[in-house]
Length: 110
Length: 112
Image (cartoon, rainbow over all chains, first blue to last red; front, side):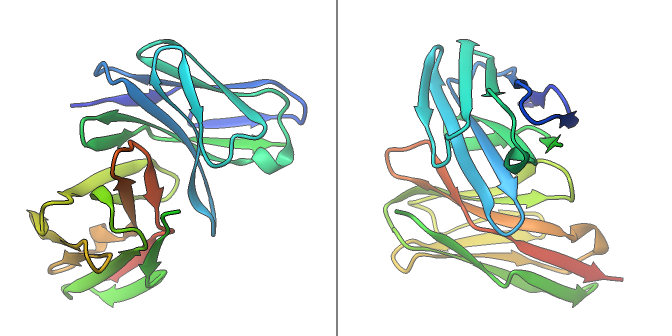
């Protein structure tokens, strides 16, 4: 079975902190994605990567950056966390046709 | 730009009832369509994936259909159970892309 793991299920940070969200997949997938999910807005794509050191902006990249140094790991970085980045963050990786999701990280920024 | 709409936003049914969830999309140039289930506070679990060349897929009590030309998909759940209570999300992958465009989901409650 494909496994996508995220470093934390719940995270509480303060405004202005630098935040790292980690995602790891164990199936050698090339394509990985970061989404955020908010009530009434659904899932929105932040960034994606189709290979090591490659990245593309999604629909809402402002305030975020990403890092993909190894194929299995895709990190989302909040350079200076703000309260409007309080959200559920979901990572996914793609195998051929299907997207597999991690369990999500619920981030609260105080 | 692709837009995906799911109707209804919420649905409550008694246990044992058959039900249909609807998904519509604006751009018919799709690669595939995927139905997901999401339990509260959890990630997404893939239920069914239909390629653009297919008309339907079945898994147990679930059946998903796709009418690409009209931009519609339905998820049919037979003999609903309380354990089916969750939010169901429809997502479309565009032709030549790995990106998914999601609907906002239908929250299903199955009453015992």
